[in-house]
Image (cartoon, rainbow, N blue to C red; front, side, top):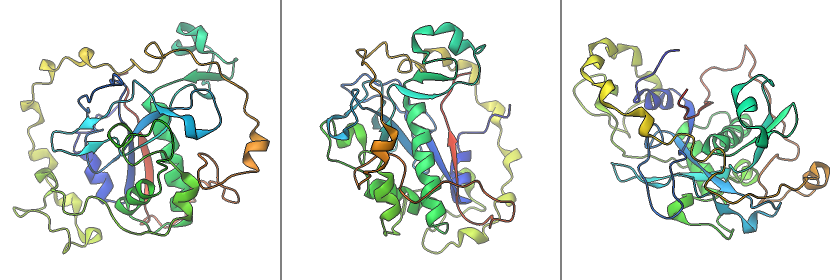
Length: 298
């Protein structure tokens, strides 16, 4: 496994890839906490977790207590928005996995598993990005981020701009939206991305013309960083996943057919008439793409 330097995410962003990351599960529900990399980077979409409290109506949803929020060291408020992240049921890789064997209470059956965490929320936003770019493939990462935030839903009981950023992911509103404004305008870029001595001028640089390969990455002395001095085990990566911090909520069956027939601008889910597609080999590689980079410890 190759470990990318933390400042690699802006490089992806400037090359047309929408980077979606989880906010982290080290929240306490009442006060701001430190946002860990890469969640503290402005050139990513940082996603927090919302809790449906066991109902289909989003109006009574709250921000999950474990969902991290706060200001970065540069003063940026995170997360950028939230998406469903509590009691999310998804496919299980296999019944021999450690998560299946060690957490029997979260088994749905031999093919599905129930989990919570901001790493369950981030893929929802990645899916929204894929649908948005399918509809408008020329959007840049900054335009995608702006659109998702501008169309996020704020009309729910637990909404707080401090905890939930722009609001609740609204895929339908994002795809139906028309704004092409951009985020991150004027934000300073890491000097490690400079191709020379001068800082990047946002309004004058043609990003597609920048030769990113001209950056001499090998000139950076990565070994000068004392990685062993970092106590990785002190970071709470999994505190929100198994719901120890929140009360148990009884899951209720969801009638997919009934719900799918009445989608509106406040729904969180699939869009009528739009189906996700896999990229084709002959697809234009200059258009933006989406990548989900979850926060995991191992």
